[in-house]
Image (cartoon, rainbow, N blue to C red):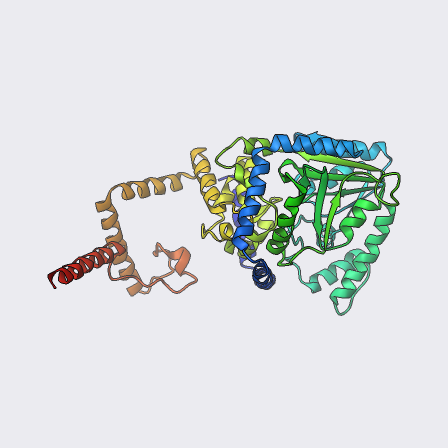
Length: 480
């Protein structure tokens, strides 16, 4: 087992035992679920909307080269610059060199998971540039010196008392009653100073519109527009998979993204940015740069079996519904992208050290059922498990267990015998009061739960009896 897998198991055990953490997440997830259901009811045909989003994104991914080149052509025509980064190091070097050459001392960042993926902030801070996260949740976790907990709500794991203590320690002001409005007002005052001092603003992009050369950003705070319009330089850092063919596609994608992400009919701020300030305009940046990041995405694109993963629109719905995520939390994954989508995507982007994430799933299929672009996530989790087994990184005990399982599945008589022996053994153990002890093969379940009732007959037997009764019934009808 790799060190990353061992660390994952340790962190999962710690977080799942933290009842305060689990209560915070449960409350937030329950609130999201109610909002999501209300949001879906506002759309006349939710499944039709999902299919249309899937079609749009699949078209873009299948013709990625064409649409990216069209996007680049439009951006340049509008006075912007486009940089193609093969990996995170190239993207960080370009932005750092740009900042140094323009004498940038302060950067404000709108929420961007791609900049988290490439670890941009530490690179800029090493050359003396102060970086401010301006999304409230990102600002909070930056003060805590930790990564975002969730791809949509970065500080979901904290309650207002914890945030109050953080602000008292880091910002020097104590909001005695931990009133949310007062906490937000304090953060706003601190961030406004950064907005007016910054020479560079950095953002991500929810979508790149090929036919207009615009980036589309969806936020619920004004920080996004302040970060992209007040500083004299705006840099948008985005994965190449964010492209969509047409501006009109946003008419479907924007409301579906909002509904899946937060349950809203549309996010508070839906912004299109098509280049730097023009001579006739009063505001906006003097320079506009788009960094198109590959970082393993082309390799995933070349994998016909897995490439639909690139159609993800980062709504976070699969995280919110995942029973594993609800118990172990976002930081346990130790990745930029957590939950089901992170468990599928990360091994392709970061290699074999993260193959264990595919096991962090019950394969219940809930993630696939809520995905707004119909990604078959639990199917891809199975693919990743298969690939992990094929790589030879599985434990010897696991390989032996699966060989035994395979043998049983290929020999029905052996399978029936095993089932019969297991039922008799468990009945004996439970009768002796040994449920949940080290002698119980179902201990992982029964040590903290009521033991599962043991059926008197196997499913195979009951199925056979049902068929026999059905045949008898048909015979009686025929005789009449």
